[in-house]
Amino acid sequence: MAKLLFKLRDVPLDEAQDIRELLNQNEIDFYETHAGNWGIAMAAIWLKDENQYPEAVLLIDEYQQQRAQQFQNDYAELKRSGHAPTLLTNIRESPLRFVVYLFSIAVILYISVMPFLGL
Image 1 (cartoon, rainbow, N blue to C red):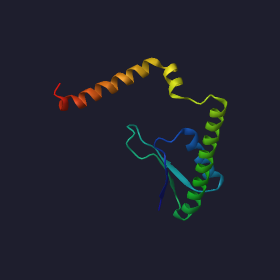
Image 2 (cartoon, helix red, strand yellow):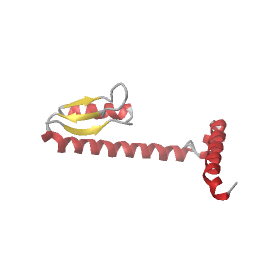
Image 3 (cartoon, rainbow, N blue to C red):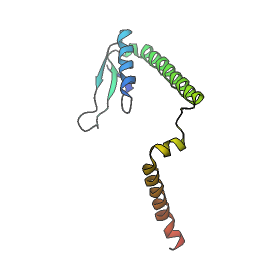
Image 4 (cartoon, one colour):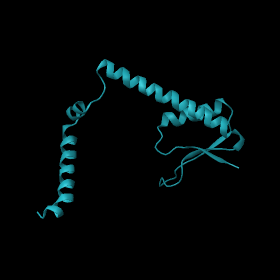
């Protein structure tokens, strides 16, 4: 019987492709389901043989730990070089978006507090 191995909802394309390649390289039989036209079905990778589940989970866990470590190293390098994104750089890159967000927050806050202040 098939066993759910890896949900693909909100997974970056490169990570999903890496998982597929990892399973193929280790000769683990799997199939994939897609979210469908409306995106309401479960996009996932399923194992055909339940007996391969422990091995597959171990491989995916190792891969995700390596991926997380790589992202942490990349971010640390960006910080060291001074190119890591900060709030100030995000505001400079998109000041209009910042103003719209700030205005939206003010409106929501006003609507939320107005009944209690009697304004």
